[in-house]
Length: 180
Image 1 (cartoon, one colour):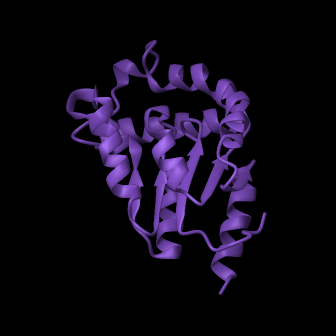
Image 2 (image 1 turned 60 degrees about the vertical axis):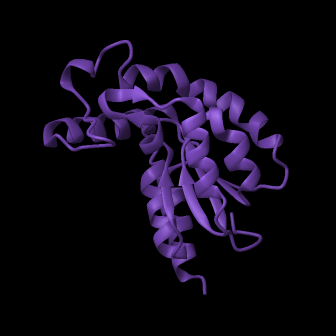
Image 3 (image 1 turned 90 degrees about the vertical axis):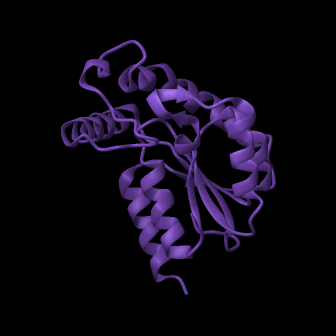
């Protein structure tokens, strides 16, 4: 999946735990452009959700720039980010791959007490809760696989890169690093 034109404004999407932020940071470093993580704007202190208007302003301000990489799946600002993007990268991995990545990442973050955004940390008592990250994966993974192609079709101007395995992602990244 070679790029048909050099990207300047890139959205990285995928289900929870697919590696959106990791890839977006790598791409921002390769292309030397700013990176933003939508989760950081959405999750206020104490896991409070940002008001929609406030979140949309953050997305609008960031995506007004000439070049950027942003990761996230938030429908409340999709029309802003996707309409301004020129490239969309979809991490579309099988459920088993994503689940194990998510579980390993979550356990690592919990044991290290890693701060995620705005003082928030993943907590042991929420790991298996109905509102926890694992439950969110099961609620959204298959739905996103069904709905994402329909959403992409609404933005025909986007150059779309669909990566279907971590190996494919790594090969694609290596090809970018070799490109002039």
